[in-house]
Length: 504
Ligand SMILES: Cc1cc2nc3c(=O)[nH]c(=O)nc-3n(C[C@H](O)[C@H](O)[C@H](O)COP(=O)(O)OP(=O)(O)OC[C@H]3O[C@@H](n4cnc5c(N)ncnc54)[C@H](O)[C@@H]3O)c2cc1C
Image (tube, rainbow, N blue to C red):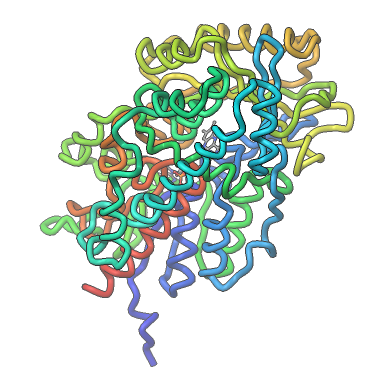
């Protein structure tokens, strides 16, 4: 006898990034027949893994926040996150270093952090409390509307929370920039710099991005940061396992060449894979918006694409993976070495489109916390990220060489060691490779930047109106990039697929 499940449409998911995997899990556990295609050899997309000699590295994301988003994904599939992943609260969360010798640590323990700011910078403790209350308020007002719902569907307007959110929108600080807001909360320039850095969490410029992005400190300190046992790559591995358990068929080393359409209606009818037409009534593209229109749909003239391409991509990054044959106890899992001139650094990235002359350097060492096996006993696996402009045809060999010299010089001076001589193995990732490996437009890390108050409304919708049956999930679509956000995007997308299926 035919059940309701047998009549559910077939779904093809293009890409096993975290957004693609999470959508496949949600639809698979709702009974949809789901087939997922990934051109790489394994899951994760930007969150991939690389072994170089005696050292293992997470290739992209390194800081996990919003644990509850992942918990909900597992719970909605009838599972417990703890059975798949071990996450430990971070304390300290990050260590900060300045050239003048100032050092401090951040923490989810508000009082301890306020005291730390007082010790290092003389900042009155109440300033941090006032700021974190404000950050929590932005979160409480805006998260439901901006992160958990589509901003492009009429159905959002009829939800019970909508009116309440709308009435409070004037309280989310859209009217001034993040840098301006932070200067109003903190006296010390170093603490203003520390909180301005949160603009980079979605590839933006604190002197342009609205202060609404001050939601992020609450996410990091109020909700907490997490160390992942065995490193970030354990996350796509866990999602891959769950996807298979709920019946998703996963095909690696299998690029999708085209999304197939019915001629008259432009309705999705399947995907073209290795010359074979595979029928599907629903296609979810986890590929970036631009290659989806240009290559998969062969529709370079779509008005949606033209609109999208007017938007500024988020920043990219220059990444070095170094196996270091020594241990540095003064470093932790997350470390930031700040530049002296932060405004100039962002002007380099967003206006002069070059790598910063004096970059702020992020060093992530998973072998210090969560994944001791990622490096031998006498060494450490250093993931070094410097914010960089999106790929505009720059001479990346020259940019990378200049950046590498600046990083070596700065870290050698800070740590009192000739770092060059300690590098046992080395690899790197530049914006064109980020673009090539994960099809991300211009090598952006997070889709489009948030350098305008309207950016949240301009991201690509999760459901295509032009192509019935086509959906978008991932960093370039609503609600934007970052691991938890693409997993939230998967929830929005899977809900839309189910809703539109009921309306068919
Ligand atoms: C260096 C770096 C540092 C970052 N740091 C952080 C961080 O600390 N914290 C954080 O939360 N986020 C961070 N991010 C951002 C985060 O990694 C991304 O926002 C998120 O992982 C993107 O997920 P996604 O679903 O958009 O898929 P992606 O990771 O973009 O994956 C898309 C997948 O689709 C596949 N694909 C594309 N086209 C096709 C096709 N035609 N056929 C088959 N497969 C296809 C690609 O191969 C890829 O696997 C960082 C990113 C980078 C690169």
